[in-house]
Length: 390
Ligand code: PLP
Image (cartoon, rainbow, N blue to C red; front, side, top):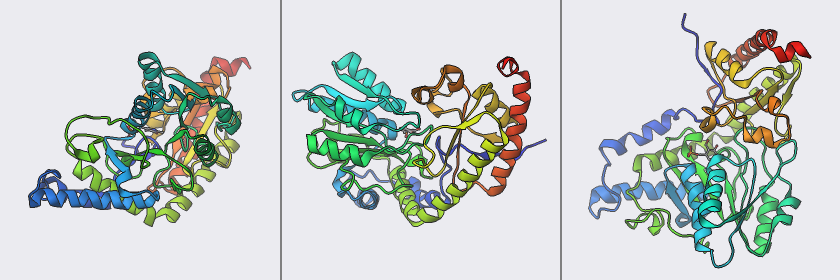
């Protein structure tokens, strides 16, 4: 029998909004010019890019020319860290980040440490996943050139105190980068108010297309180009622009602004119902992440004595798509570095599950999940030697 599929993995990616699909369509076969071409075909494509860039810049209170389109969040993170590191080598070689960043940041830091002589300080977080501003301040040395702290964590949903970090960075004359991939389009983002110098975002997390993102670079920030070649993106990122992707990104941001209130309210209600239901129905379950400073669509729980993967497989059989953490590391059997950073035991780290909600989830989806999960947990615990031993 076919089961109805229910998607609870919006933090991994989202389905494109129908309006986004409609907006992109003409750019495959009608407006297909190369934006660098001087003729009308090229001009039309260039105009579409400019329109998207303007709209997106306005959303974060940036200037149009401060937005550089990339192939996604990963490229934006690589660009920010490597570009700033290489352009500021004379000033220093120290970067401060946290131990709960996405792999796009952590692996880039490792690369810089191993191959470019960077010194990286990984600031720890508290049991809610919150970065301590004092720890960031303490880590600053005369060699510090960049602080990179994510806006909100993709696994546990904790929203970080980036306003405070931005303020300190500005006072000390250190660049501040934030990975806003999980918050772009859903939370307020003002690069002036928050003193952000560089910001990464990705369209596919906000009902836009995959394979397109951006790096905001404040005017005056010293950064080397990331891709060398043509003169696109103000010579900072060569390669013919992904015109349909950029148009779709712009439309996705426009819709996110229009529907902000409605989307926020919708997922918050479902999130709170889901958290309450899980904690009530499943004994020895705990919420991971901060109880209030969290993304409106994130539910991350630990269900003791059973592995997250076993729950995922069983949920999948009932049509429920969830995740144990980041989609990028789901093929690894290592427990999540984010849950481990909360100071829990490895067994507990293996027992976490993430449900991330979105605009197409319904109240009935949540009821279905709240019926299926406790039943699955009961079955798995009956088979679990860890549960029997206690
Ligand atoms: N940063 C964060 C916080 C993310 O959640 C993701 C995607 O999961 C990325 C970066 C990578 O973005 P992309 O998939 O566009 O490369």
